[in-house]
Length: 366
Image (cartoon, one colour):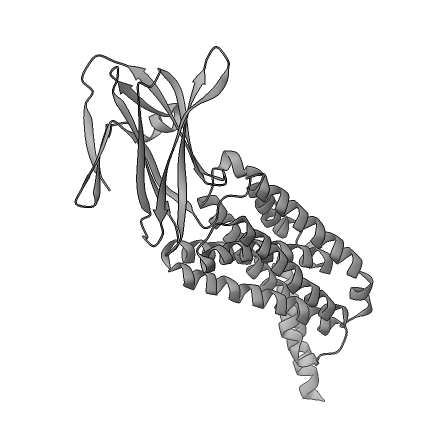
């Protein structure tokens, strides 16, 4: 009996300590989950990263199910320590899974185009901390879990099938619905409350599914798993020993950031745009450079040309490609880097000035 009271007392002390520092532990686990995800994405092979994310996904589902079964009294009290720290584990895995979506989609699209989708992910990450007690509710956990599932599946399928087909995104959605149909049935067997909330679970999942499809076919969701690694404007580009030798103007970082890159061109001189695009091995995709000029009279952007080339994935540093135009009018220009569906990987903005003088150039080799 004395042993029993000692164990209970030990548990109560840990529980009290946990609740005292929960305010700091919850956001800390979220941030750690995101940082782990960012590090694995940028430093480890893509397949290992995806395997790790799948592991997080399984752990999240298992932990949510465990908390529901434990709270019904169907599991032994010896799991009480695991139940106590289960919210932290869910917070960590949510941080990693939401972070994966943020990292993948951030690198794969232009923020000015895909900001609504980025805002949704950022809002979920912030509210997962600020409203952490609200996130303990099953309806919220299931909704976030479904969102991370459809996001993860839409990343994995294009990599597995080496394609960016819209059918794969639809297949990712269908697979997510199928998984959650059985998952919710399983959870409904744990307690009456879950059975009563089943229709709300389904309504939330249907809303998320519909919203994701609207965002995708409106080209707001970036073309995962493509990612624009590097881009820039140059006076000349030539290929030498499989390397790109590029001649461009020297500009300071802050000058480029504030005013945009500036090209001082002689009449008839060409302007070159260079892009390096990451794609997984064996994935082939058509990339388009849409050259647009701002018409001061019409107060609108006018497309001059759309030039394309095909990339093949597998290079860590990205697939290098370029296009060029001549006789560019002075003023503001931008180049949209898109895939064949019109999804935007990036936007390159620059200014063109006319000059009759020789411009000092420096060479960059990629």
